[in-house]
Image (cartoon, rainbow, N blue to C red; front, top):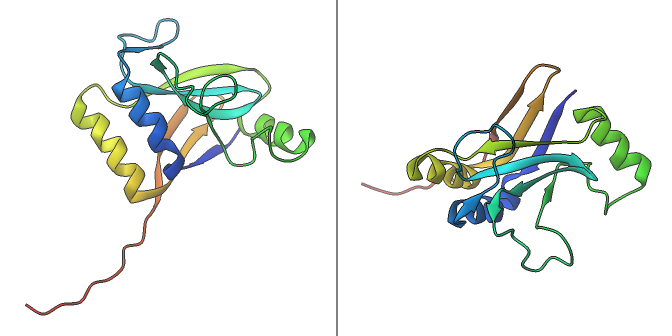
Length: 146
């Protein structure tokens, strides 16, 4: 299994929708309702908001999603995205909830990190799933006189 990489610039819409939504899908036995991202494997590998009502603005059908690199069924040949998806997460379909935080401060930290890092990575092993940010955005050096 492997690492699913998402561009943080694409995640802002998902996180903002989940945080603003009045209800949330948490899955079976996932605990109290709170904002999160659904990590999904079916037709590709992607993230989507767990907010209800769903984020459908500008989407022909279904919900707005952000695909992991190399796992978008709308780009490339079937064998490419399907093979990459299977290599990264295995062959079974699933949905896992990645909580954005229990408090507004924790949720805001996720939003802030989307601006401070280039990538959000979900790593899978046969027994665990972890997620985090990587590749800090380089800031331009400033000069000035005191």
